[in-house]
Image 1 (cartoon, helix red, strand yellow):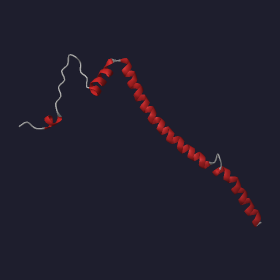
Image 2 (tube, rainbow, N blue to C red):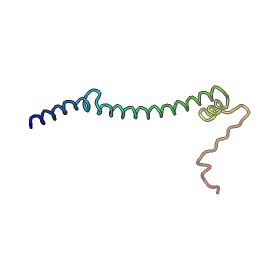
Image 3 (tube, helix red, strand yellow):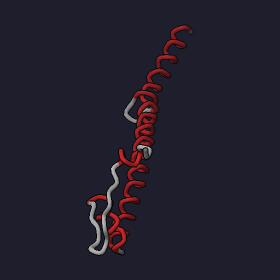
Image 4 (tube, one colour):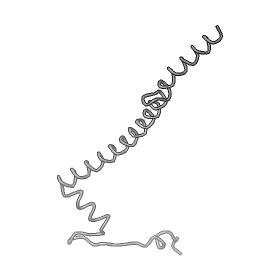
Amino acid sequence: MRWLTVGLLALIGILQYPLWLGKGGWLRVWEYDRQLQQQKEVTRALEIRNAGLDAEVRDLKQGYEAIEERARFELGMVRQDESFVQIPENFAAKPAK
């Protein structure tokens, strides 16, 4: 009777091995699920970034306001009929004597 119990336990162990540690076992499924969740987070972040870039491209294609804004702030350009006045930060921060 004892050999029968040991034999059945060994058989159960042999049958459980592929379920837990085999090629399609639960441990690998859990690992793949974790990797899938990480990839979904990365994909969501990239989709948000792409949506912002798409909106910026559409804005640049449709009107001159976005182009003018970029030229003013990034390149420091002004129109021909405008005057550019720059006030140093140090001067503006000091109180008048």
